[in-house]
Length: 310
Image 1 (cartoon, helix red, strand yellow):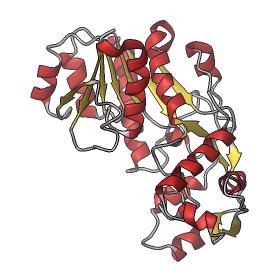
Image 2: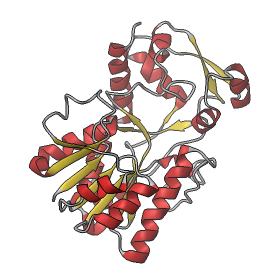
Image 3: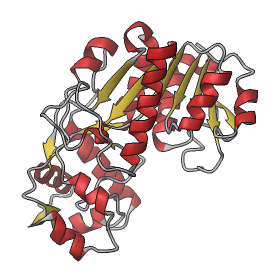
Image 4: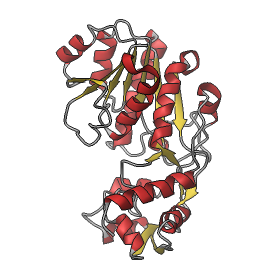
């Protein structure tokens, strides 16, 4: 395999790069715009091209090298068109989507047979629906060798954890440690299913290793089971020897209280169940989560505490 990874300097991307480098080091090249420096030290030993994948001439030049496998962590319609046009030696293309476009879930646990609606029009999930439909249609009509990976809530070291408002605010862990009251939508029984960023990265590698099963398919990638939001906050607080102080509110009341401070789509999404079966990925790819959701939540809380003041 001669692998090209778009977005390899980001949080997910650099984890994918490290996974691939372990097995295919000399055959891996990262493409980045050069704007993100956070994980630069971790990928410093991996060959990197600085380019913009939306620029057609840059993509033409990149694919003068006969890359056979392409991963894109943030796909776009333009990048897909350029890859299809210029990647003459392409054997497998894998891109990252999200399980968020299934919301509100038609059944629990949800699986890949559910309608992927994009949640709310003009949201980020709607854009993921567009690019997912594009590559799957190209597969059906032209044989474009695509696989789509749809992760749940991504957690793990390197990014702040999800907070009680559905974002990733820096003062969430300090609030937990200070036992400040946390507003939460509904009754806190909404389901949340994490995936550890390293397990998500491994799912991309596994897709490349199982092309006969993976090409033309979509996979939901999560840890083994979902947690309620109440349990999520309890676990996060427990690593500091605390108990969360929770105040339940309706979504509409929270939007009024936090007007201008929270994103409406994000908060409404946070109040939707996220619970998925990973049976298809286990069967086709040999995907096996390396940790429990509980362990992933607690690990992320400890990492975040090391990054933010108490």
